[in-house]
Image 1 (spheres, rainbow, N blue to C red):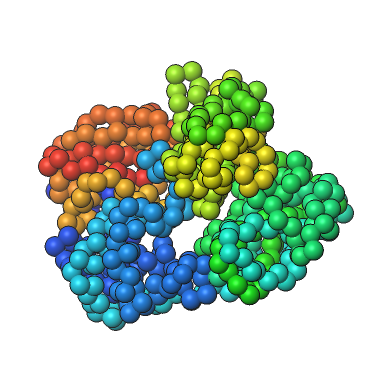
Image 2: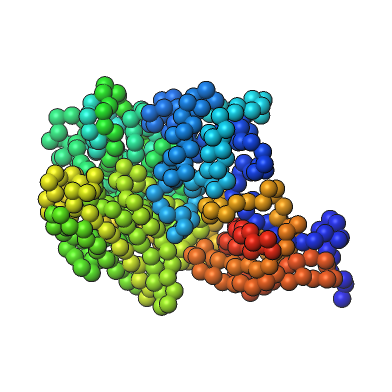
Length: 526
């Protein structure tokens, strides 16, 4: 039997693991003073200037050193509290694709920069200033719809629906969707629905202005959510072989949120759809957590001056693949959570601990969650109908029940879901390494590596100058699948973790080192 080959270039290197470099695109030594050019600009340009840019929805721009330094204190405070960038989902409960959250190191770099007098640094090393996005990303859409020009004049948050006949004379499948704001200064977010009833058109005709006012939904019980837009969001492309079925002769309804105190701003938002007449696996977007159908302690009714928690239960008759979720409540809602229970196993789905109606969005799974037939999707919603709730639409508080209006309530979690087909579990959406959100500090240098990643074999090799003493391996649903101590192979002069019993998938590997540091690493087995 031939002698095993050492996979490393130098035969006598002490081998350990890759820790948290996956968390940090802009890692630097803690001994180095953070500067705008090398540290802060890359962080803000990647995470903040989709909104904080000239012509954007945010009230000020963070493009360029001179603009950002004036807000250094506010940037440090809002990022430290994690109110900015806005990402309402609890990242300690579930991690998602394309997250817009800052790592612990990035937050500490911003704080250091603000505390040290906002040094600019070497301007030759600064990234190129971003430009406002213009136009669409999707090319050759099947359907390209534009709402009529609408002049926004409002002193309070306005939610207005615009009805756009889709022009589909046959049933088709939606494969991609993109919303292109007509005026990025005033389009806060957009919910996109599809409806084949006449209700939205009648509501539109009854309103003297383009579109019609509607807060919670479209006013039609048959409207199907097909997309969500928030600033900076890229088009949503359905996984290969899947699409959302659109019935013929329907209309697209854009429910647009215009923020308060907007005067004489004209909007003409567009929506682009890519469709096909080819028969695809149907991905439905449906609220498995649903106040109208699955509450155990319903109906959804919150008396005045009370807080109340509701529980939803939805049993699965088939094994399903979950690709994304989008929670939805109104103004009395305080928190909402969903999880799956299969026997003794619980899989976190989504948790919004501090609900804010103005910051709702879709959360896309890094790889699909597979929920077995016979398991149960649970939902929990907390409502605060007291005067202490600053968002309460009634003063003094009045009893609130389920409905579509501003002063009504809802408890929904929409699921982008399809019947499970073997192979769904390998449809990885986002290979980007997860950012570290723990309170622990990093090594001064990135000294840890993993070989191979992605991997196909039965072993992981760890390389580091700091000995790894223990590991835990978690799958995409958060379940621990393996733990122990890395093994030292004297023949290969290396440290390894056996992975022959680990199925293909996307994992998080948590490591503990001899000096007490803890690190985490995304690892993919093909």
